[in-house]
Image (cartoon, rainbow, N blue to C red; front, side, top):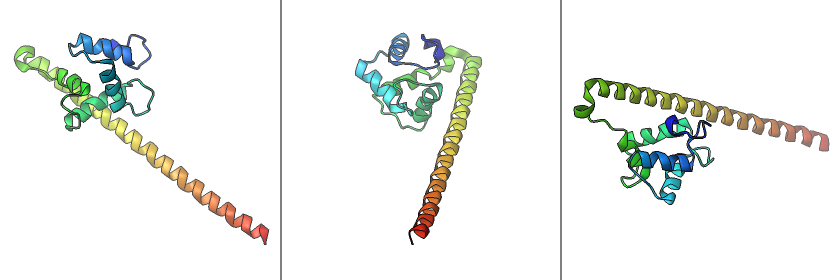
Length: 141
């Protein structure tokens, strides 16, 4: 992914994705590229982080991508043919794929932890507001 990060900012933007897809032989329309980003852009910044890039392969493995989508084409381009790559090439490919999936799992755990923390903070806020209202009502009497 970062081979195509021309801006060296750690993200793949629309133009970088366009160039990447063209180099991989799976050119997309402008709208198609926007839809590719939109489908996995968790933070709605209009570009792909490494974590969002990994999400493409996770969705592909889970069968969550439409067959005609650009993301499906990108995921398909990452498949390997053992007859042309050899066993060592396939081994390296699958080791990298396992590492990417493990990385994605770690990110999912971080997201869940963040969500739990936000829920906890919201509940604490709710309790503080209730306590404040209770105190406020005591002073009104």
